[in-house]
Length: 214
Image 1 (cartoon, helix red, strand yellow):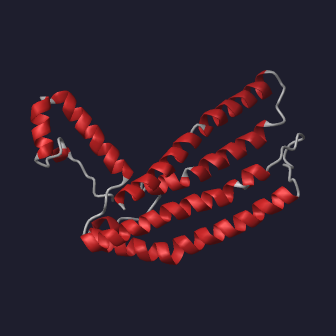
Image 2 (cartoon, rainbow, N blue to C red):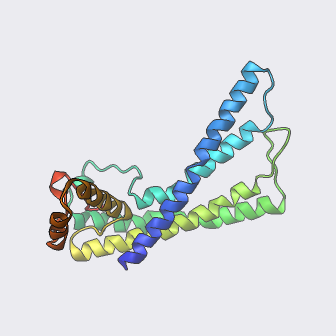
Image 3 (cartoon, helix red, strand yellow):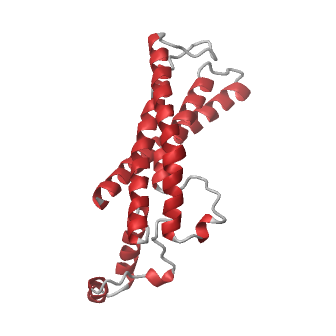
């Protein structure tokens, strides 16, 4: 089960990291538009459409990745002082009452919205070139599915935490642990490091390692 959870974390991470390159293209488009407009008095007819589509793509496709890293904003001035089991109970209730109904509605309405756009061969009305925008709108149900998938992973983590009393590892925790081991390998004698790992000791764990998942 843990392998499956980390596999979905990895899927969300790969998708988020791939679409993170959108910010590079977005930066290039904005800089090109500013230079063309103010230095050469020749504004483009496509920069506005490209910029909002790229920003929307970046914002949406990073959603599941952020959820996998537990990175969404939360009012945790009380939550962070709760025991892991109480945190998990709160999260589980909120996922069931708010997250899943909202995501399912998001997917259904997004699919309808995208299909209507495709059927009309909708074009942007914000620029003379009027690029087609239905491919951009099909990202809505795709993002909904990715969030739904990652949300199911988070529910399983909540249930496991309630049963076991501590949060299971996330992919980010595993990556952090691997980095600690690599750093320790560079500083310690290989035989000594192997003995520590065999004894169940994590090198550097007393230097502030927190892999509780929250």
